[in-house]
Image 1 (cartoon, one colour):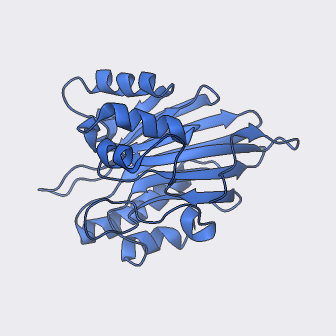
Image 2 (cartoon, rainbow, N blue to C red):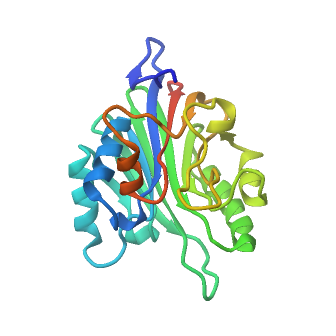
Length: 247
């Protein structure tokens, strides 16, 4: 497998940004393995799902950021699980957490969002986690597209646990308007959940105009074993390298 391009700036002012989306199961598993996996991916942005959101959630978020040499930007409890971390390379222009309408009896869902600058390139980022209910997921897919549009930025990256594979209605609805990173430029492996049925339910999407250089589950990773990946959480990480035009 060819290496995914590293972070950097181009002569024309565009930026290559490495984006990781990762369901970390509230850090209930092996935190040391989780930190090793994230560091090995060398991300500029981590779009987290199932971040800690209950007792001392801020301490847990700070602990993960410190262990991975990243910075907490937004999310966690206020977004009901989605969270954003970045490297020091990113300049945070603004950040906001939002909630989706709640269906009685089902888990509250939300968004962690931020607008980031990498030199002359600006990128809006959205992390989310859709419902286990198929009907609610389809509605939430529309809300995801509304949120991407509401960011008001020409270049947006969306990462999430969509709880269904690409052939299902919610995922398909998003993919009809945004670029599905793995479908456009597959790299690495496809399957992202570690429990049957084994499917691609986690993904990185982005708006047209972003050049996808590669996207997928980064296996193998330098100095990371399959044991690490399985010990870290019950999902696989999805890593994308994106070229963001100068604004």
